[in-house]
Image 1: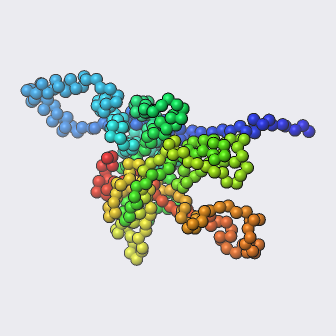
Image 2 (image 1 turned 180 degrees about the horizontal axis):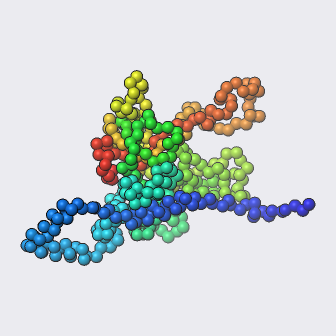
Length: 383
C-alpha cells in the first residue's frame, strides 16, 4: 500500500477564510437601503385643498418663488448636505452631517427599515449581534464610495512605516437603531434573547467614567517580530493564539510574548452603566433586579444617575474577568503532573474539581447602541 507524501509547503498552507454568505447579503441590502431610502410624506385631502387655495390666492410672491426655483436649479456637490436633501435621501444626508460634525454613529429608524425591507428587518432583529459588524461595514463602504476625500489623511512622510498609522486613523462607524417595537423590562430578559435586537426601559443608578476600549489589536511577536493585525477583542484583553511565522521559535513555547502596537490598533470610547428596573415593574414582595449596560462611541454620557432611559441593543454574555483572577496573582496554566499538591491524587471532590468552574465565570450584560430618555422615545437620539 503506497503512502501519500505531503510536502512542506502543503503543511504550512494557511486555512481558508470562511465567508458568511447570509451576513454579506445583509450588508449589501442594508447599504442599498441607506443609499436609496426616501422619506415620503403623505398628505391628506384637506392639506391638498388648502395648498391649492394658497396657490390661487398668492399672487404677489413671485419673487420668492423665483428664489426657490433658483435654489432648486443650483448644483450642489455630493459632499454638501443639500445635494442629498434635494433627492430626499434621509440617511445619506445624515451621513454627510455626521462627517462634518465629527460624529461616528448613523441613527436608523427601525420603522423605516420594517416598512421598506421587512425581511431584512426581521433578520437583523433576530440576529443583531451577528450582523452588527457587517452593518457597520456597510456604512464604511458608503463613505468610501461617495466621500472618499474623508479617508485621504495627510501623512508626515512617504515611508512604509507611516502607512499603518494612517490606516489606524480611519474612523470607526457605528449603526444605532431606535423606535424598535416591544419595550421590555429587566425582568423580561432571559438567555433565549441573547443576540436579538430589543428595547429595554430601566433607571440608571450608577455610571463609570469614559475609558478607551481596545476593539482590534495589532500585536508584534517578541521572538521574531512578526506583526499580527486585526485581532478582535472578546470583551477582555485577547492576544493571538500563536505566531503565524512557521520558523519562529515561539511556536515551541507554552507562552508567547506579544507586544501591543498602539498606533495600528483601533480604540473607541467605552462606558458602563448600572441600571435597575423601574418601581412600577417590580412585583410586590420582590427585590429589584439590576443589570450592567455597555455604551460605546457616541452613546457614552447619554444618561446620568437617576434618569429613566430606554436602551436599544442586544443582550450578550461577557466573561467575568474579576472572578478569574486573585489580586496580585497572574493566572497561569499548570500541568497536573507538575503539581506538588498532595490532594491532587485524592480524586474529584466537588464541582470546582470537575473543571466546570472556569466555564461558569460569565455573566449577562446589555450592549446598547442608543440611549433615549423615556419621555422622548419616538424622537431620534442623534446628537
